[in-house]
Image 1: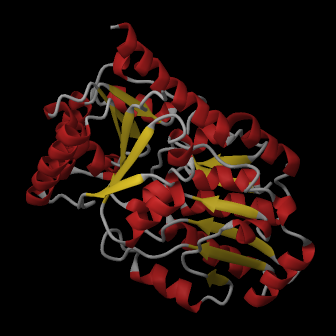
Image 2: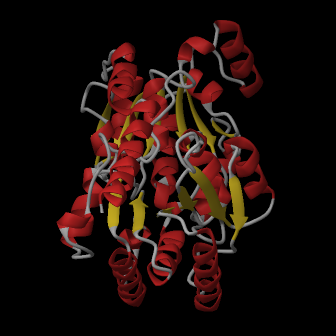
Length: 389
């Protein structure tokens, strides 16, 4: 008779994190355990069910500070945990982490795991920072284990006294999901494919293409990027800036002048959010990623796998993926001048790099199946500890 699989519940605030940030991982884990996905409901959660081939349960959660809705989410999760009886609850994203870890502790779930992929509180100040610090400590206090996905995040957690070092562990070389390097492979795009996309965007063979992929918000350094590019495009007549992403004007708006430049500079090409970013990497000369804070940015790994050189800020995650001078270069945060200087050097062919090395550095450290197997080992170790007890 087949042994019944243990249950693991994976939780994120919004379903896009289950289908995007953790793409493929839940389906892989479902081969070994009965995996249930929980997130806010709607078509996004239906996609999780279809894509990852797992059971899903909707629980409304918000990314903002909403005490009443958060209490309702804790109560609902508590009831789900009592009913499903998982041996592991594993959460991602800040709000899901707080409500899930609290509910799991109250429900008596033995193993309560929370992965940290970014800390929004890093940019907060005043009373908001105090509140976010308190919430973070509550989350870590309720969790049995915390998994920061980079060394930089681990250092921030320890420096702020959120928890003790014995509760912290980095899986593999970092990253929450690794990267599918067979999917992100420039060999999949031929010259005809690239020429067609370039033609549709008004890019010719003489253009140097800088690309940003991500949300068009202040915290991603877009104000500084546009300021730097305005200077670059005023100096060189063969540069283009490709923006692949959408605005979040309510949560983190850009400066009015930044939006104006994006709308009026003919060398800035904003293509919005794209389901598949690989074609855009395939026509890119350099990634520009001047973010203020990250956990372990998929975009930088994706660019490297596509043999693209990266200009990134000196923040956790970015400064672990990038090896200075080999697959990219690291600049100070919030500096349009530092960004301009590196972009200028790139335009002058002063930043020499090996495209194959860019890819090899990603494949050797962050291949997806390696990360998945390391997470599976964590689950299996916990399962074996239950059997021994």
